[in-house]
Length: 193
Image 1 (cartoon, rainbow, N blue to C red):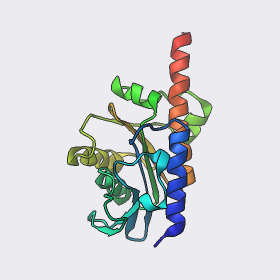
Image 2 (image 1 turned 30 degrees about the horizontal axis):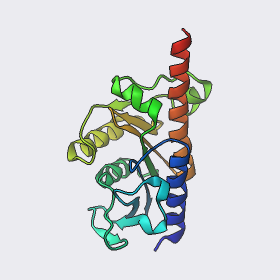
Image 3 (image 1 turned 45 degrees about the vertical axis):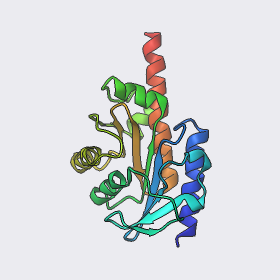
């Protein structure tokens, strides 16, 4: 079921690791198709994700399809909440890039300083801390997405990383990379001051 989408998720999972957007077994990637959600399995490094590591769930987080012994990411509810408030998108990337995460630890939004970020991002809200995988975190994300303008396509999670969403997983991945690059450039600019 949905083999092409699984291949795409596996590709961008591996790429997220290669581009240093995530390390160890952190991060998760999902896509929506009709009333189904395809998401990376929990406890798997994005470095190693294959099509067999993609779980299909319904809107109530019930497993529809998946390799025996694997469970969907503990952040599945968080992903579903984004889709609930953004019917125009079909992809979500959650990664832990260093510069974005550093800004979030300081409770600071990523400074939108570059021409590209001003055009394509405009702003990247930050939400307060909640434990990974918790209902509280999923609710914080839902509230932020619900109340943000439609041009907002990313947010940072305090001490936890980055969420990006868009139509098309390639576009979604580009947003995640752009936010991290923006954070890196902002950090460098602050050192030069």
